[in-house]
Structures are given as structure tokens and as C-alpha cells.
Image 1 (tube, rainbow, N blue to C red):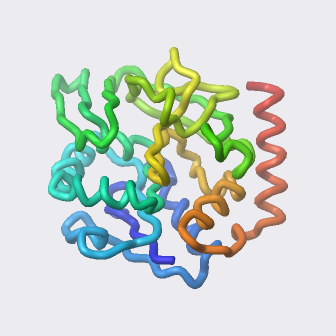
Image 2 (tube, rainbow, N blue to C red):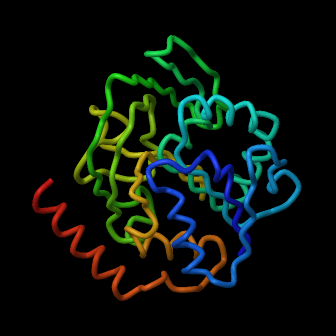
Length: 238
């Protein structure tokens, strides 16, 4: 399995770079390609099995959109081929149609891979937790997925046919939605941080299987026990 980590020196907020620390531990024989912001993405001319990008500042979000714009069709091609891609926090917003930065009075056209829009208000942070199950036919393949949210943005649009999660507890795209994130084949964009992979070892294994890796999640017994306890608490108290 070849994993490309996009722009890890700037797309690393909220502890989400630990997603890749956990994936390295879970797949010790995998090859990891670290693509810096100044590099040409590895995926431009190669076929990684897994692409990851984490949360970033609003300023770098705009820069990353322009960095990726020449590769929009390539990203879409990889998504249609089934390449695993996980964009966490506000990283997935780079693939949406439009982002309105309310506080800064700016607006940016995203890559438009998903027909969703974003409103980012730096005076309106949302902090919360999420618990949900995979939407669609894979519902039972990763167990319940738990995680945290800390964001200035809200997502808008219709994700009824391509949501990532059916929300049991917490917020979906926004406070009026019960469907979290968006998905195209194995391309997943989610607002959940935490980081999501070590918090959800079965989901980690699910993604690894999609990428052709049969390894077990790292520290599996302890990780699954902690996941079970966390899910139980969230079901009771959220």
C-alpha cells in the first residue's frame, strides 16, 4: 500500500496528523509519500492507494485550493477508480463548489468535485461530538464511528445520496442536518477530527481493506476496547 500525505507541514491542525501516525503503526510495510506544499503531488503521475489531507487554516485553505486546481480532473479520475482518499476537518471543503469567508468578506471557488457550499464565520465556532454509522450499503462494515468537531464552517447542499455518515448523535453538514460528510466511492470528506483513525480502529481497518491492505489496526485489543467504551458513553450521554 502506498499512502500519499498531502501538505502535512500546513494541513495538520487539531492533532489530525496523528491519523497518519496510527496508519503507519497499523500498516508497517506501507510506503508513505510526504508531499510538501511546494512539491508536485505524487498522485499527479502515480497511483497511490490512499491519499490523506488534514485540517488547515483558512489562509492555507485558499492556497491549497489553487495548488490543487490544476489536478482537479486527476483527483476526480482517481476517485472514480476507487482510490481511497480521506480529507478531515476543513480539508474536504477544498473539493466543494464555493467557500464564503463571512468574517473576512471573501469568497473562493473550490474545485467543484462536490456540489456543496461552505460558510466560514470566525466568530461562530462549533464544538461538539459525533456518533454515526456509515451511510449506504457499507453501514455494518466499520462499526459506529465516533469523533469530535471544532470548526468555524458549516456545509450546505444535498448529501442525501452521498453522505459519509448517518448521524446518531451530533451535527451533520450543519445544525439542521442529520447526514455528516460526503463521499464519492472511496473519497471521503468529513468534518470529524479527533483524530478519527486511532479513535475508530475498525474504520481504520475498513479503509485499509479498501486500499488493498490486510493488516490489523495497531494496538488492536486496547484500541477496540477504548472505542467500545467511548461509543457506549456517547450513546448514553450525548
